[in-house]
Image (cartoon, rainbow, N blue to C red; front, top):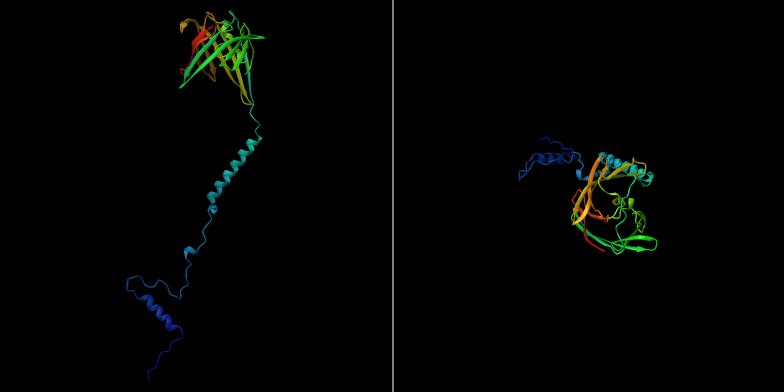
Amino acid sequence: MEKRKEIKPGAAKRRAIQVAAATPTISGAPPFPFSFLAPKKPSPLAQPKKSLLSNPYLQIFLASVLLYLAIFIYMYASTPPLSLSFSYSEEPLSKNSQVGLAPGDVLTYSASGLNLSAELRYEISTEPGCPIAIIENSQGAYCIDHSGTVLGAKDGAKPNGTLGFFGTWMLAIGPGWKWGENITTMVSNMSAQSSQVRFEDMGAERALGRECRKIRISITEAGATTNLYYWVDSEKRFLVRAISPDGSKIELSNYTR
């Protein structure tokens, strides 16, 4: 009598899975990749994504930005506002002429340079308490006396009475004349910046058909010197022509009285 082999429960199922895993498929695909008896591996897609802020390098960068921002805010809040002040001094000025302008005079200048052009107009009149009133472009009015001293101005008197076309120093020019002034600028508690301005008569020279004295004006700042040239009417003592190093110039285009 032939003995039958006893098959334990579940063994048949296990055997069928093993045979199926070892048998190639019709399409030629690899054998069945896993057994039901093997533990399943978690899918990568199922893993939680890491936050961008969890990157240690990004954390260091953001911390640095916040630190610099805090330092900037502290310095800005604790820094007092800037203050600006000037001091002005000049050498003694020996005048040899009085102002040659008179009420009714009208001077027109053309200014050009750096792709810009403009027209400047000065009218001379007289008012109570003001021997010579200079009206600039029909707006700002300046008052000077016959010695060239600035008595007042709507927009504030300018250093040494320079009014665009006239300066008190023009009443002292002549052969061999030299003169200077110093301007010191102070910004808060920073070191002062000083500018030296030197004037020198270079001799007689005609300009735009008028007899003039050619004046060199040297401005020295931080060790660098810039030269400007003025032609001043020898008799009337007003500007006829001015040329700066960049080629900009101002010239008298019309004078009526």
